[in-house]
Image (cartoon, rainbow, N blue to C red; front, side):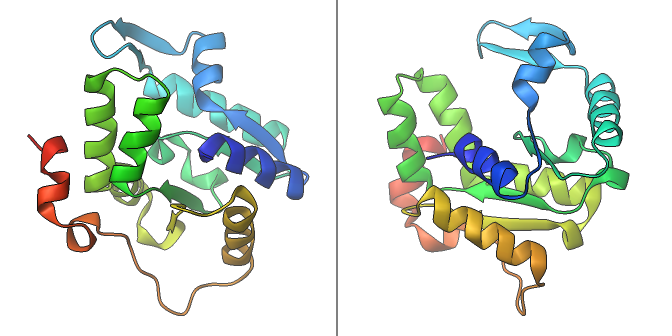
Length: 178
């Protein structure tokens, strides 16, 4: 279970539009280069922002659910809320290994999860008021989507952000931090 399954179900429940940012970037060639070592494209952030804005305006009567690691790329004027899907880094590492990911990609993704990079980038660009984290470890897609729907309809009394370094002993994470 991951962000794509959650985003697709959320779009269905809201009768919204699902947008996979990776597919959009590849289909519209919204990148400037390819990094063979990391096996990923380097996106043209400005072109991506413009395309998201176009799609949001086209579907202004619906929620556009964006499946992405880059909440900071969505123009603020079309944002409702940003939900950052978080997963226990050790669980994430195991899932990525099972999918056959290369060690470098696993390490980078786990490091980003430990440090909360997606959250930090979204907050830096849009402020803390629009960003919500959800720990999806050991939760079903339906549980996560229901939590998002609840957060869309009501503000939490107490907002907290996930700090894996205070939850998981450092010796368990040290493999990914070197």
